[in-house]
Amino acid sequence: QVQLVESGGGLVQPGGSLRLSCAGSGSIFGIYVMGWYRQAPGQQRELVAQVTRGGNTIYADSVKGRFTISRDNAKNTVYLQMNNLKPEDTAVYYCNRVGVLVRWGQGTQVTVSS
Picture 1 (cartoon, rainbow, N blue to C red):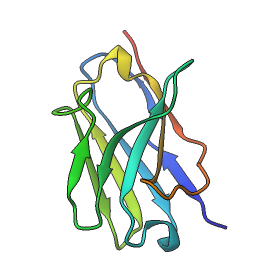
Picture 2: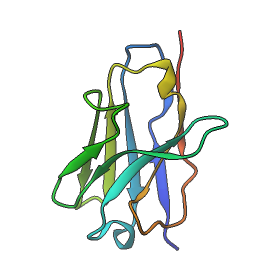
Picture 3: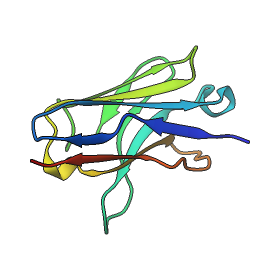
Picture 4: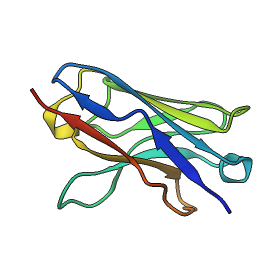
């Protein structure tokens, strides 16, 4: 069964950093564009960053210049380096393909608060 497992979340003060990881099977990653999504309480899930197999990236305006997405194709893992975190970044973060979604993982909670 295809599975995505996110990790690396936590509680951090504004201005701090976190690095999220997402591991999955090769059948999930393959040639697909992978993305990091987030969902804040009462809001819809949104795509914040995406990366192609070749390493090309696209970011939402809200995280541009602060977040960096990367992937290790050999390890079937995608990362999200988050710097200069703001309270509005507080959400559950998920990874998944972009476009052809698979079953969502449990996500990892990121809380930015002083």
